[in-house]
Image (tube, rainbow, N blue to C red; front, side):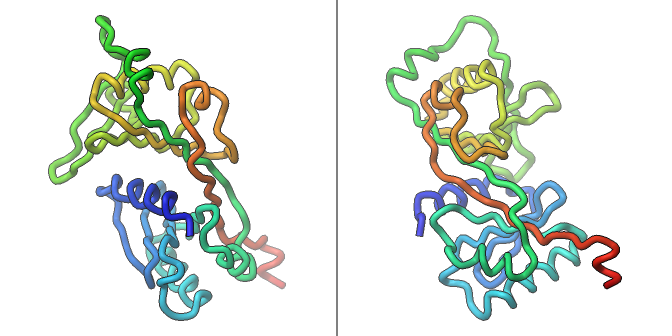
Length: 216
């Protein structure tokens, strides 16, 4: 079990308090971006038959009118990928999570500037513990909770990463997690900025049958 990655996933899930969360047989289900994301973090503790559990998740997704997508972290759930494949699922996408922790050298490099920072910090809605990092009044690029910053889409230009690190130093952020979809390795610009590759994840979704296949 990849416990460090599991803990990171738990932290990421907890940031989205405004999204409906369900639990099915020990798996966490989160409604995200028009999809029902299944996080099978507690696979070895789940009860019952795994194919039956998959079917229950699918039923919940149908009730919600959303596609059912399983997000599996590397070095966990070794057999679940093959079980999903046997049940008609295919690998739809992958991504890598990068992690950055502040050091004294980084703090000196990105010391506060006299000029106005290009990023803004917006308070969450009532009852939320998170704040939102905004590129402008309408564009959220990060979610901040205490000293942690999460970037839900880490596909940023080089200059954007520099702004985020400077913003982090200015606002007491000591740790950043960046979800970078479509990558299996940490992009070069992240490595230059001091990030390290934390873990890879893969997303599985049931392959839609063509009209001809459905008729057959």
